[in-house]
Length: 326
Ligand code: NAX
Figure 1: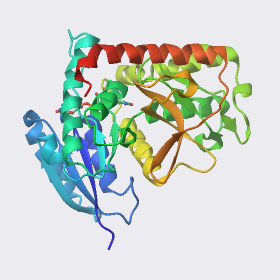
Figure 2: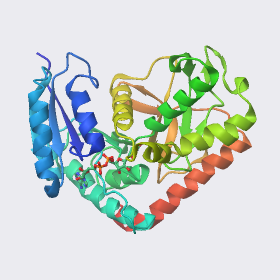
Figure 3: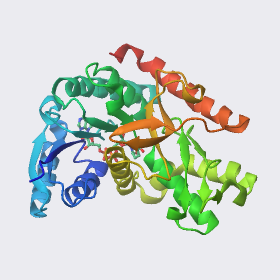
């Protein structure tokens, strides 16, 4: 019988964690033949809420769930895990500066990086969702010196999926008709959703929309989509974020389609002029569990300027938390 795979979710009693756990338990991540053991991690004040999540998961009698391991410490929660979704993070309080948020979350992710280093499987795959996701991934990875930095990525997939949906709606086609979307940079308002390479049934989608729409509507809509959801729903994206997290790890583990790529934030390696030292959103292909940045795409001055603006922001975030890098 297939061995169960151990999957950790931090912030499992939060909005995204609550949506994610049930979809993974139902087999949406690794398919209907792969049993799972869920490691659900919370902070002590949320232990009761976590117990409720465990009760509900157990009440679903999911055939694929072999065990549920609730915990309030990362050393216990990450033990022997194959996959980690690092969702739990401190939300921005009313009087909090972005700088304070960065510091508080940086501490959480340095502790979690050390714990992953100590107890996770050596080929663990860790997707960081908690914000500021790119810099949190950098901190976790730099505090896990025995794990390959390629074990870590941060989530650009929600932005990627949002970009596909908006462009498909504009062109009056289905999202599955589109290929080769890219979201470069940071998961923040400086991200650059780039449609220069997008193909609509093999032809350039960029040429099918006006420049004004692309620059003045499409790009800001994707950059501000999170805020628009909060305004409409009174709460931040949860089910769509969980869905994107599942898409991201599924493609990482099982591979991207032969004729497409996806956007993932991975350690910058100098590709496209983005120097190492940050996690940067790139177009990537995944094969055999490994991620490779798609090489050799042409980027015009308009694109370069936006890619550099997002890089600058990531370097500023890095400077703010430099003391917590391992
Ligand atoms: P919630 O506040 O609903 O849930 C967060 C949960 O994390 C809480 O239950 C909290 O107790 C727990 N937590 C906090 N610190 C923890 C720690 N050290 N260890 C374990 N658990 C901890 O937030 P939710 O809406 O679920 O969002 C979670 C994170 O995702 C936020 O940082 C949010 O900004 C980020 N997002 C990232 C997205 C992305 O595309 N990368 C999109 C959606 C989302 O905004």
